[in-house]
Length: 177
Image (cartoon, rainbow, N blue to C red; front, side, top):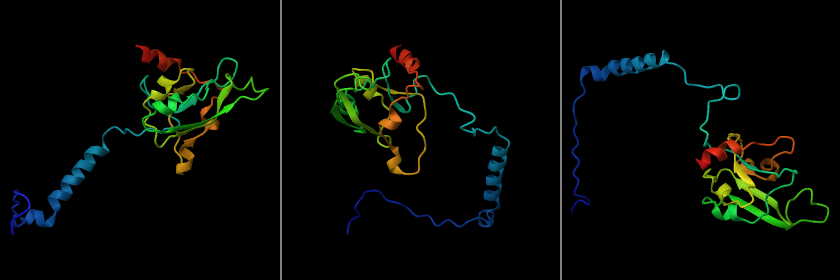
């Protein structure tokens, strides 16, 4: 019977030395490495109290913007969902009813808008594809959660609050350079 590969492996049964048998050199080298790390500067950051600086082009949590009058900008055109390479965005379009002119900018709006943050790769193609400048990636970190279902962000997490507007102009300026 011939071997399946042309690679030959040679096994060496070398006898261990006395120092290798008692493991003391290995223990001392491990302790030496630990002792060196003990006196180095600590890189740990107490996150909520202390934040590390992020790059100006950092892409974090998504936000659905409102216009100057507080109406939602999204018209449920679906270009962001089509542009998303991870297929993380889903939406359902609906027609604006009479009396909802103060809530939605156009006749068509997204009644359901969801982003699966576990699938999202934060590439920014959704904000580039949006003709109404409705979706942006902010500089905020995505919150840690315990369950998978909590990472599906709906409109309640994505649409910015009227009293807490989010400034995305800094990253826009950087992207244009």
